[in-house]
Picture 1 (tube, rainbow, N blue to C red):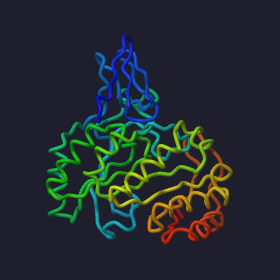
Picture 2 (cartoon, helix red, strand yellow):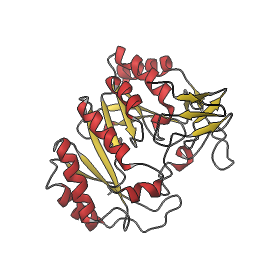
Picture 3 (tube, rainbow, N blue to C red):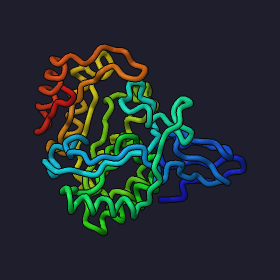
Picture 4 (tube, helix red, strand yellow):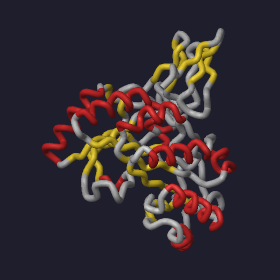
Length: 290
């Protein structure tokens, strides 16, 4: 990956994700997890955990990657989207100074400590590796990359649960150390992604690249009534995924009112109808949050 900070007279430019934040000295990026320090973009959340748990792999959700197993799941803070319906907003929309004035407790760890913990849990609890999840892990790219390399040396699985908002060069550098991903394909129009502050084409590229690099890929779409639940949109999404591989599992997840969005929850018949549409193109379609 090229230097994530291109220096100019007054700014550092973060090239990790499509926002390409132009940051004055001391300024923090859109993700709240990266800052310009003396002309270089540095990670504010390196090794700072807000969440950790030993989860069933199905919770990621990954239904076709070592089903029935458990994985050490860790998260930090920050995200490069602004989903107004976020389920984990107290960490995803937090920065180093916390969330909306509230301090955010963190535990400082090193990649070696995460790898050692994963090994201990392998011996005692059947842990298969580490999942980077809960917030958007890729805004803490450096910590994910450093830890993933160590995990691969120890033959432990590396899993990412991500929105896929990452540029091709850093994504390509990371993928050789990744075993499985669940990528949120939030919707299938740029209008929907604009509501969230993101890029549809960037997420599509992340999915395509992961599959091309022989990473196990599953995709999740949270279905929000009146926003991304049209049959035509679902047909287009499923057909596009099938063009990569009809074996890619698609998880259609039920939305519940959360954070700033008070739209009523997704009706179950809507999910069933969209699953039937997706199932014309994809072999595996799963319903979540039902």
